Image (cartoon, rainbow, N blue to C red):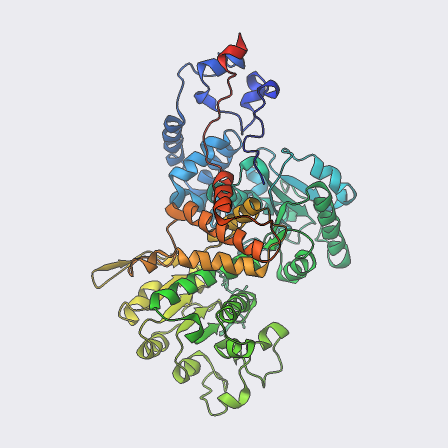
Length: 569
Ligand code: NAI
């Protein structure tokens, strides 16, 4: 396990003067004590007043508040990260709800677009295609020797803004900040990487300031060979590291995951993390209804990569609760732009075919969607208990459809998960009003709490931050060698078990960000237990595992750098 929590703390090797102030993980700025200032030649380089971390955090927040827009706030925080990491994480922890969106979604999208214009200092690794024959050497140049988690992207499908080329590095940097902030992975043990295989974004290529490799994207065999060279180098240089794939385009994301998932400790957050967080919120909502998952009839509106991914997770969970494969499949009513998925359709891919209902079953059903069975028809015919939107069709959950669903079900579970807000299948306040406050709602985009019947109903936002930092913590603490599907399911179940709505029916389905570190530790324990069950982690008692998780969770605090008094004389 990563017990090395203070990798630099051999006082003999700590540099002096400006060299020390230049190391973000050791720099304390005005918080260096008098003793440390004397020992490391810092007197004169710093103002005379010695501050505490608390005082610094107040001053840093004042400076943050003076920034005029979100990009400026992002730049400020990144600059702080590159100067004093302890203070950076302390500030983030103090203002977690306010600042998480500044270092990660949505503001990080802007930072990726502007990457070449706001670039200041190196962080992470650029592995560009022309250097493909020296990947092991590039990896060896990393700033910190011991690494627990790598987040890697090729910058092709950055959030909702597509190909950003080398600017995509902003995503691994932001995401690893959350691995530390929430999961507690030591910042020195994280490594952001961009595989710079060029860009097809003409705006980037035309930009004289673009910092990436100015070339169209490498594709096909060359692309996959390059990824292969990268993975081989990772296995050689950093065996045991958790390698998280991030924001790869769909045609690359699945083949890469399939190819490497059994070779090393790896997962794809877009595919697996997304499904796990949605699943966690749904399982939490089902618990709130007092019913069992196996009793649910699930209407999945949108049968693309996200919809099928979430359905796959739910199907596995249903099988885990005793249903046969066939019984589990029969609980799903999946709809795409051509209507309900059924066995008579010839346009379904193998992943979608799993959810095709028998054509005979629906032969007499209405077909009001251009001669096909659409959402309104399905909701009219079945007693759907869960309605999930992953369709990108804004407003698709109409008042008539929602009222019809709510007429037949006491607590309908309705999750409009499409992003951004304009594509959300419904607005949260409409769903609450149309169901007289009975609907259990979680969304993909942020919605303000809804006031209804004298209650304030917070709307949970299904965001991957509930899963990936906890997964990182879980695999590090349990020394897992693989990330199995069962571990993802265990994470989702642990997230559901920590749903605030279980204790208070008016509360959100997912915990507030202020409680997320605690929940991450719970999820990490569940992941570690499952890893042992799956035979991919050494056996440990639950108490011991809990202790390991606790030890592995780094908290921002300054270590003392001064030698004991007796040693100095
Ligand atoms: P995709 O393009 O793979 O799938 C979209 C699906 O919606 C397809 O099956 C398509 O046929 C269907 N669809 C389109 N128009 C339709 C219509 N008029 N009626 C019925 N179905 C229709 O897209 P992907 O990657 O699955 O993403 C879908 C949405 O989910 C996006 O808005 C994305 O932002 C969101 N998403 C949200 C996540 C969250 O955690 N909140 C996670 C991942 C994706």
